[in-house]
Every structure is written in structure tokens, then in C-alpha cells.
Image (cartoon, rainbow, N blue to C red; front, side):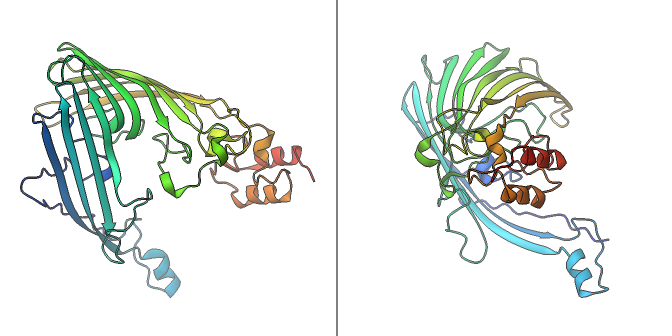
Length: 356
């Protein structure tokens, strides 16, 4: 069996620019290099080029007994891409600063470098926010940040965070509690219309690539509220407790009753709640064991109108055909009772609301 791990090479564009803190994360999902700054104007950025070769990712040996067998078992491939990012921080006055960050990536070949990205534009803005500190940026115990930033719960010793780690448009208030720790209060995180919220990080930012709801009617917006307390006053110890409540709107499951927002100025009242506790301890700056308890609850309400999957005003054979087409999957649109699988129970709902 042959197994070639993916290899990557990160290059520095200019000596005066800082390399991104991690080449294991996408350019669009890295923490700001300018979370704190000393000078009135600071510019940081990076350039990276990566070449990947892979084979037998599915751990299947190459079968050359027939052409079809080769197609089924040979997954050898390679790709390369180039990425660049730039972040600018400017102190407007001792209490206020503006941070703007953007990135662009493209695969080698087919002129993808310089083409529009998956979010619908040439550049993806990784950060675009204003910091305000009432007692000054250097010494204030309270800091208010408004705009777009990368935010994650953290506290997992560098492991991937599947609860909340994303580029968010929000208001964040940081309140230091001396040398003990700090409160991170999120009065509101807003997810615009034209987005679905079926991913683990609550929403997939689609932006310009998706048509917006007609007249911005219906339940078009997802709003999250909450915060966490970070206790890191003991050397090596990091303890975090968090709680969030999310009022789910937007396209997809968030507005089933209002035909994805195109009918009605009422909401589904869908929601989710997340609470958790995380503890990690770093030993000799080398090993960080951690423990995490994460609990979530919520509801996705679906009325009879959701059984008209094709939105043609009737529950008939076309809706039944879609359920059969996605049989056994977890497709959110055809999983009428939201039990995580498209099966006979969903057909029962279709037949119970049958109309001509």
C-alpha cells in the first residue's frame, strides 16, 4: 500500500512582512496578526505557495484488473496554489483604531490566480473592524470591537474547534478582570440573508453568489448572543466557560414556513443554544492536554407548508419524487420531520398533506 502525505511549502514574500501564524489553516480563517499593535500604522502580510501530492487517501490498493477497476481505485492527484494576505492597522487616536485585512488565493493553471473567489469577489475581507477603548488602547480594561473579525472559543490546546471558529460580523466587548482573566461578551453576531446555516460553525458565508430573498421578506437573519469567561491567571492553565443562544433565520432551514423568506413577514422561531466548559494545561510549552464538555439544544420547526418542497403551492408527485431522490440521505430540504434522515416517515408527511 502506498500512502503519500500531503506536503506543503510556505514562502515569505518580503523580509519586512510577517509570515502567517499557521500554514495549516486557510488564509481566510486565521486569527488577526494585529490583535495588538504598538505603532500608529502597522502593516503585516504574507505570501505562500503550496504544492500537494496525494495517493491512496482512501487506503485502497490500485486495482488494474480492468479500466473500470482503475477508475474506482486510483485516486492519485496533485494540485498547487498561491495565496497572499495583507493586514493594516491604523490608530485614529489613543482610544480608537481601524483594522482592515484581506486575502486572495488561486490554484495554479487556468488563470485562477487573480480570478474571483468562492465568496464572489477578488478579495476576501478577513477583518474589517474598529476597536474602541474608553481609557485608551494601552491601558483600558474595557475594549469594544465592532465589525468583521476571526473569532473562536479556543481553549483546546490547538485542536480544531468545531463549535465556533469563523470569520464573524459582530460586536464584541472584552472586559479584563485584573490578572485573573477576562469576559468576552458578544451582544450580537449577525448573519445576513442569502446564507444557509447547516454547517457546524452555524453558517456558510456565500455572499454575492446567492440571490437574496425577494424584498428581504420573511425570517432572513440569524442572530447570536452570548459570551464566555476565560480564566488564564495561573501559568499554563486555561479554563473557559461559554454560553450562546442563536435565533436562526436566513435561507434554508431557518425560514421553512415562509418559503425561504419569499412569503410572509413572520419567523419560524427556530433556535439553538450552546453551553460548554473547556480546561487545558500546557506542560513545558510542549504538551497541552485538554478536556471539553459541549452541550447543544435547539429546534427546527416545520409546518405543513414545508412539505411543499418544490414551492409550487401543492403537495403532489413532484414533492414525492424529491423525497425518493434523496432517500437515505440527510438532505435538509427533503427531511421533513428533521430527524436527520430522509425515510418513510417523510413520505408519510407528504401523503398526509397530498393535494392536487
